[in-house]
Length: 153
Figure: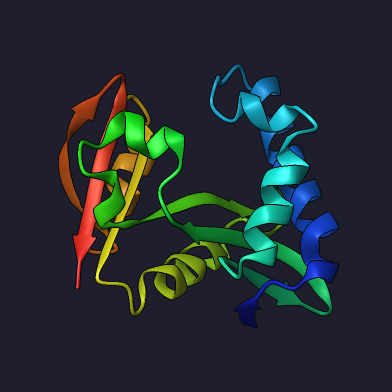
């Protein structure tokens, strides 16, 4: 079941993000390094309390999450007109549930109903670059080593 996150979901979401960041580090990937820092909890708390996080819950356990948020300083550095869209951030699924299409379900929920949605990913990550195209995003360019994608309703 997909639903908006509540305050009681902060710890499980935080754990999912930390676990994924540690998996990336162990695999030699540089993405999500900032989520190894304790400040990640502040980000999760802020997003959840502002009603911008969706979770995928199965058997009373949070196994996936995605944030759909107003532009951050990160987005402002990548986009010249950052304030004209909302942004997908921190799409995460428990690796033990790989192959169940949970990420796809969360993406469909995130993009439903928004007029202009953007996201970015590491330009050299072929999987993610192809993945976002499947949800109707258009590739709009590359900046600072990141592919930029946008979808308009």
